[in-house]
Length: 266
Ligand code: G
Ligand code: G
Ligand code: MN
Ligand code: NA
Image 1: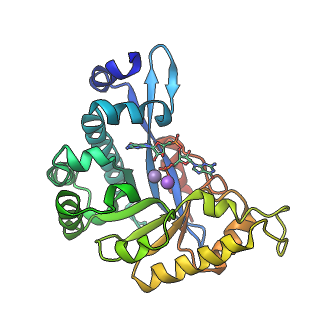
Image 2: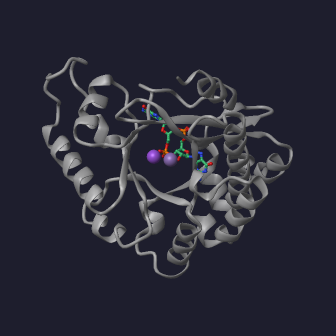
Image 3: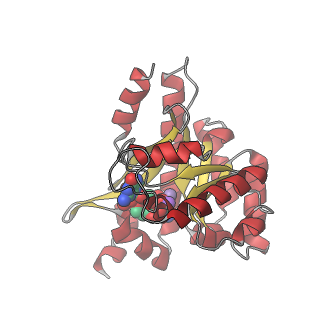
């Protein structure tokens, strides 16, 4: 495939960049962290979303060098924000990690090296893995998760919520955060944005409420993805959701925009 064959040289040519989407404390609406999201500034096709190339990069293995570049760039940026804003609680940065990075590369060594080189404190790095990357994870993935967790790096389960029983299993892994899949939050879509309007799927709310409660009892925090309306945010807050991400707060934006937001935080 044409795109795939040009992935590796494009990394060397510096055609990738990262945007960052705010992660906001639900209780106070304040910026806590950001998720790094990769884009390909392609010389012929223009700006490409990760949906266009991440799967290709996973197939041909170029996700390993690309993922390394993403990690290093995100950590360097997060450290810079920390240095530029000394009086403020530092932002953490959350980085998506593909299954192949866990299996086909020494993720633990890469992370340790990048943290040492950038000077980013490990607690300011969070890695997002999908459920499928950690389910049934004996051996290598489990060892990697344990080593990263011992280093102080946070582990989040991305797009969580397909199988309820998985939570019991996940609780035995060194996972610190659940990122509730956007499909659950969508069930919180009110007809109008006003308080008390009936949600289209009341069962979703019961399930989400129980998941948040169970997650908390298991010592995990919960981030809701795809929060688009203030009614969703109000409801999520009332059932104890810790962190929110979505268009209500901000779309993914450039690092300069995050720097501006940091400068204007009260
Ligand atoms: O930013 P956007 O919504 O277009 O992202 C689409 C998908 O690409 C999401 O599922 C996201 O997790 C994934 N993605 C974004 N950046 C990265 C990255 O750096 N590495 C990996 N593996 N996936 C990413
Ligand atoms: O799979 P992952 O959660 O990493 O994907 C993150 C993607 O979700 C980003 O590409 C981002 O653009 C998208 N996204 C973020 N916030 C919202 C939102 O509020 N609504 C919708 N529909 N998509 C969102
Ligand atoms: Mn993600
Ligand atoms: Na997600």
